[in-house]
Each structure stands twice: as C-alpha cells, then as structure tokens.
Image 1 (tube, helix red, strand yellow):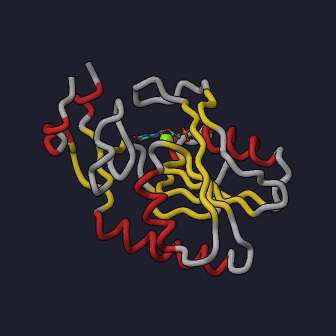
Image 2: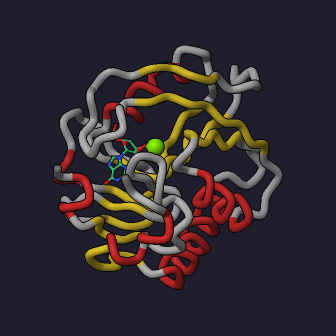
Length: 185
Ligand code: XMP
Ligand code: MG
C-alpha cells in the first residue's frame, strides 16, 4: 500500500523540474495563442491526468477560447496500457465547425489519443490538433504524433504534475521517474 507521505522517497529522479515545466508551457502557450488567434478554439482536456497541465496551459494562452473535458481510460491501475479503452465522460460542447485542441498529459503508446482524436473527428470539427505535455516516443505502438509537445522523455514510467500511479503522485509539482520497486511486487 502506498501512502502519500512516502511520495518523495518513491521518486528515483526528477526528469522535468517545476521551473522547466512552467517556462516551456508559457512558450508553447504563446505558440498556440499565435496559431489560434481569431479562431476561438475549444481546448479539450483528457481527465484526470491533464488537470495541472491544462490549468497552466489555459492561462498561457491568452486568446478567446472555451474549455471542455472528457474521460477515457486505458489503464487498470498498473504501469502498462491494457489497450482496452473505456469512454467515461463525453464533452459538453457541439464541436461541429470548431477548431479543437486536445490537451493530454502524456503521449505514450498513442492509443488513447488516437481513440479520442478519431472520436472527435467524426463530429465534423474544422480541425483537431494534439497538444501534449510529455511525449514518450519509445512507447509508441500506433502511428500518431503530437502537433504541440512540451517535452520528449525517455522510456521510463513517470509520475507527477498530473501523472499517477494508482491515482497517487498527481500532486507532485514536477515530473519524476517512479522507483520500479514501487510498482513491482
Ligand atoms: P497511451 O499509451 O494511450 O497512454 O499513449 C496515455 C495514457 O496512459 C497513461 N500513461 C502514463 N501515466 N506515467 C503515468 O503516470 C507514465 O509514464 C504513463 N504512460 C502512459 C496516462 O494516463 C496517459 O493519459
Ligand atoms: Mg491520462
């Protein structure tokens, strides 16, 4: 059983610091603001891991925009995707004719974002692009690339800034590598 007060001792190393995260999010946010000026985009966050990234990014993009959220899962509490996607919560907006930017914490195998992108594309939006906080190219099993990516990371299981193991560690203000002994029994 993992207790929240053991958080720091479960981290092997910090991969992206709090300062690096916020600096880079401001950079990518400025790029999004420039690219979507006058387009009134809808930012669609994939719950729950995207919450800290969404909040930081949404404030970095100072143009008229709307927010929405959906929830899917490909995880059963472990560290590897099951490939089985469940749709838990749909977005509220009608996105027909709209410019949609999907925000996600991590692009790993690609199956979650592929599923979500194809689902939204079937509703007739003007465009659908992907903005991810982290990209882990070594994990990819389906052909999919992000349009906007803040950091490319190596092939380790990471937690923090929204990313979890068994729903813990999301509140860490940085992205770190979880010690393998935490999830290996
Ligand atoms: P896929 O494989 O579908 O993964 O691209 C997307 C979802 O899987 C979770 N995921 C991770 N969560 N550390 C985590 O805490 C990781 O290294 C990791 N890799 C994938 C995450 O929920 C993401 O939305
Ligand atoms: Mg997630």
